[in-house]
Length: 409
Ligand code: AMP
Ligand code: MG
Image 1 (cartoon, rainbow, N blue to C red):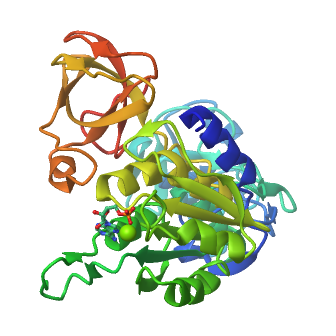
Image 2: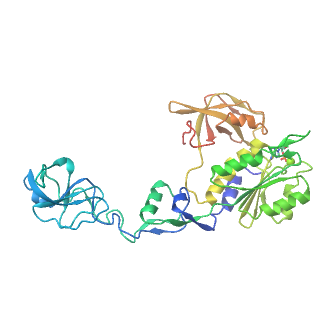
Image 3: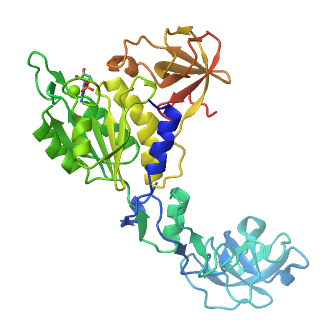
């Protein structure tokens, strides 16, 4: 049996960034990681641009103010000026419009007074060059504006739009497939015969994948018989990540490990010193990662959060923070008889003042999904610790960074 840290290290070593790329529209690229350097095909701004509504002037005409100057042209945004500004004249100009030749400064409209005789009175002095954004001051034509490996946010989408990159190459997300195993399982839309339970793991895993921006393939339920399992396992290992729940513990019908071996999967580890979730198997075949998750729903969910979520993130080359770990003050004593495993228990974390507080919820063990619905995080009890006191500052992980009580470590 290996520790959580060791198991994590092994999983992360085997999780490689996906080598496939795909072309996506810039408008559906938010959160994706670009697979190419992006260059600008234009200067930004592409012309000397007024940043104010006002008058384009020659600054030396304003040595003494107020001064009256003749308005020779009106330049709205989207229009290209046709007249050169010469001494004694100005052009009326709008924000975003090109500054006409001859002018070196824009006076904002608030500092002017339009007269009836086709002239404008400039009321105050300005610094030469004021209110003009000069051509190429933000970006020069040919500049690299985004580097390969960048996770696209709204600001990068804006730059792609401004430079006309309407389709771009991004790193593909891992293809994940999900298989539930167990002859007792029926799908959620069915009634139960004696001895049956509804399959919930497939769907919690599905939702967890979606939280990682991945839409998994669903392979259904395999009964605990070799032929069915073998067929479905052979399908699953064609994906980048194969999640199998159930069938990996010590019972007579837990035949997943032997079939995995038979299918040429290298088992990297089979037991982890974690509670819940000890019978947690990790295997590889080429670049494909195979996770054999304990059937109990709480175990499956927790193992995904701790191991699989970070692996998917790494494979997606996603640099966003998804490790929502931190510290919280424990609100109730916790005791255990055996301290040989790292234990995770569901807690309700609240925030008061500058402090997170963790209250363990009523928890009947690894099948008790109901407990997890009351929890927004997990308290971590390290190996060797058999008691935590109320008031102790403890390690916790949150299920979500958008949780109002989330406080990064
Ligand atoms: P196993 O690891 O196959 O021995 O399963 C351990 C426990 O988890 C058993 O009580 C199973 O009935 C239950 N279980 C296994 N798979 C699922 C599933 N997909 N959904 C809900 N419970 C499951
Ligand atoms: Mg089973």
